[in-house]
Every structure is written in C-alpha cells, then in structure tokens.
Amino acid sequence: METKLTNVKDNIYSVTISIPAKEATSAYNTAAGKIAQYVNIDGFRKGKAPRAVVERHVGVDRIQQEALEMLLPKYLGQVIYDNKLDVITQPAITDYKFETGKDVEVTFEVETRPEVKLGAYKDLAVKVEIPEEDKTAFDTALNNFLTQHASLELVLDRPSNDSDLVVFDFDGTCNGEAIQGGSAKNYTLDLAHSNFIPGFAEQLVGHNIKEEFDINVTFPENYHDEKLKGQPAVFHIKLNEIKTRVLPELTDEFVSKNSQFKTVDELKADIKSYVDTQYENIKKINAENSVFKTVIDSSSVEIPQNMIDREIESLKMEYQQRLSYQGIDWNTFIQSQNAEELNENLAKDATERIKNSLIIDKISKEIDVKVEQADFQTKISQMAGAYGVQPQDLLKQFGQNPDFISTMSQQIINDKVRDYLISNNKIEYVEVKSDKQPIEA
Image (cartoon, rainbow, N blue to C red):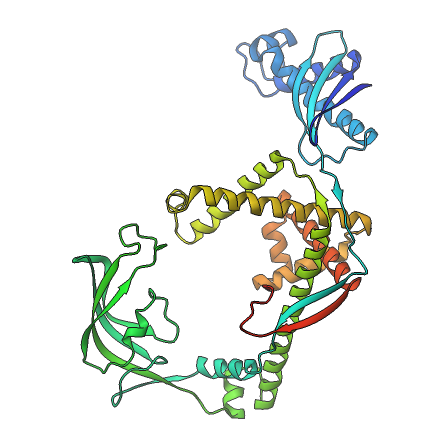
C-alpha cells in the first residue's frame, strides 16, 4: 500500500493511500450486492437485480462510497499504526479516485493530539490553602438534626424575628401596575431561609400579627422577567401568623425514634465523623487542585483553534441542557448576556478544559496508568451510591450508551492521575482566615 502523509496545518494531516485494484473491485461488487438487498427496484425481488441495474438505480458514487466504508478501517488503522499518529477525531475523506480496474486513490484528513510539553509533576513542594477548621461545625450539624424534627408553635406576644416562619398575604406592584404572579394569600415563608428577592424577607421582621404594611424592594438586574429587571416594586403585606420552631429535647428515646442510632452518644459520634470527613474532603480537593494547577502552570501546549471551537460548541450544549432543567430558554438567556463577554468566557473555559485533559492524558501515559476491571466495578459502585440505586440497575440504565464506558474510563484515569500527584508530591497545608477566600472545593 502506497501512502503519502502531509502536514496541512497545526495538528491536521492529509493522508493519501492507494488501494490495489483487485481488492477495490471485490469490495465494489460486495457493496453493490449489499445495497441491492434493501432497495426496491421495479421488476426485481430485493437482492436479485443485476449490478448494472443497481448502478443505474442508486448511482455508482453510492456504491463506491459503500465500498470505501468497507475498505478504509483496515487501511486507516495501518496508516495510523505505521506513522504513529495519535488521532483524536474520525478521519474525513476529502477526495477519492475510484475507477474500475485501477488502483483506488483515497485522500482523507485526520486530526492528531497536540504535543504537550510536560513540566515537573512529581517531587514538588506545594503549599495548599485550606479554610480554618470550623469549631462550630459539630454544633451546627447537631442543631440542624434537631431543627428537622422541631415543632412549630404560634407566637402571639411578640413581633416576628429573623428565625421565624410567617404566614402572610401580599400584593405586588411595579411602576403602579400589578405584578403578574406577584400576589398570594396565606403564603408561608421561612425568614431564615428565604428565596425571595433581596430585602423582602428582612422587611418582614419586627411586625406583629394582623399588622398591614408596605415593603419596598428592587428586582435584581439578572431577574428572569425582562419587564422587572432592576425595577423598584412595592408589596402590600398583611401578616396573618408568626410561628417559631421549638427544638425537641435530645434524649436517647428521641434519638432512637428519629434516627438509625439508639443513643445520644452514637448520634454525636456519627455527626463528628461526618464533620471530620467533610473537612478532610475539602483538604483533599484543595490539595488536588493546587498540585494540578502547579503542574498545569509549568506545562505548555499549543491548542489549535479547531479544537477550541469544538469544545465551545460542547460547552454550549451542556449549558443549554442545564438551563432547560431550570426552565430557562437558551435564546432568552443569550439575549440577557453581554455577547462579547460570554464568548470570551466560553473560549477561556474551553481552552482550560482542553489543556487540563491533554496534560492528564500525557501524565497517564508517562506513569503508565492501567484501567482494570476492578476499577470499573469500584466506579460503578460509587456512582450507584451517589444516585441511590443498585449497581446492576445503573448498568441497565447506562450500559447501552456507547459513550458510557469511554466516559467512565476517562474518569478512572483522571482519578488515578490525581491520586498519583497527591502521593508523589510534598504537600504543606496552610490554614487561611475566614475573611480570606480559600481555594474552592
């Protein structure tokens, strides 16, 4: 087989191969017979029409393309192997010459993985910022458990405070007009955990039952309703009820009835273990991010624009899906954004994602990462636990997706590379005060 390899630009190569006439003719005849099996030709049963009739019916080009699809996997694989091409996209045929009785010449383009110049990735000394350990975390978690089982009692002898639940009627207007969906009767709002627009819940504090009053707020600039963005609004309020939470007494009997534990000590031990585990997880994630960032900063790779463009499209699809889950139309979202800034952010995110992926891939090859059957079993068990289903049910749900195995394999490789980086570098944890932003977990 004759082969001509030409670097077109960046990481794109043009490959021209010559396929022997005898093999090409055999593939052409097989393709014609295959096509004849599923096309309807007047006067002939399926599969019984002569080749010349099939050619007139579907066209020679159609048969040639079918023949090439049969031939190319073998030849492409050989070209990729012989030239050590690290191909990352499906090869695309750009030209071919297919004449009966002659060797067939096919030209196609392939895109290869950009070269990564890997910096130091082991035996590094890395300082990792972590948040100060929250000394109140245990008490907060215990209080949250009690709050889940708290009873609500009516308050009759005092104004509302910021930890109460209030029941009220409201009517909202904006620029003198009623707000669509801006009124309700006997609405219950938890003042400590309000999802209303900023300033709304705060102005419900300090009022007594049966009291009527107005509150003034301003809708956020990013509010989903175009008519209300950044607009001032007035809500007339009638406070009907004030309720306060009464926490239960923490006893062995209460714990036994409302948890999987039998005693207060067992419950407290579990909460402490949970709090400690959460803090260790934050330390681990911050360490992984810090070490990986150090490796990224010392490595370099020239990423072709075509790769960035594809990744941008992939990101857009992901964002559209997330927004659709929130009931937000993509086109409406686009119109509400600064187009130039959005495109810049997409390009930045795409470039960063590609660079991270390429460097992880490079390190995995350097340290010879292997993906074993046991790794899949562990990963599936972890995913099943996260989804709250049985591993076999997860496999039934996703096992038929052709991308499932490759995606899971990549996740396993990512995990192994990150574990390697943590194990092979010296990490110094540095606590930061709460007023200084730590590395995000």
